[in-house]
Length: 186
Ligand code: ZN
Image (cartoon, rainbow, N blue to C red; front, side, top):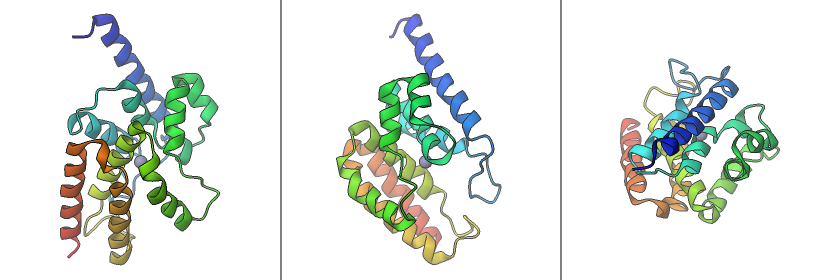
């Protein structure tokens, strides 16, 4: 058992990451029918890593909570480094697409880069794809035609094939979620 001081420190650091991400994503919504608050997504990713993957590493869980802040909000790498340290900052940067590139190129690079990510980044990438793939159903996202959903699932499978070696339980869970989403579309 960690000492109560250590437990307190871990709790504080995780809650600080949640507070920061909740503030940064405060005006964003997910693509589901209810337009859920965006923060639900990073919380789900971190929770899946902990519950399904058995991840207890603080840096990984913090970066999971923060993984979309640079890409999708007005957050600079320097800001993350100041609040959470260099390791968390570098980890989030590993998971950040270059928004100057066209969308198709960014998607291609995710497939290409997945095998070369650090182990922590692979875990978060896998958790991210589990959550995103789980949100694809016959009815959601409502504005996506069937073909776009099918292509998204195929692409997510290709990304995951490059990073699934980091955690067997998460990889198995991804397969189950992918199968369920595919079945919902036929
Ligand atoms: Zn994400």
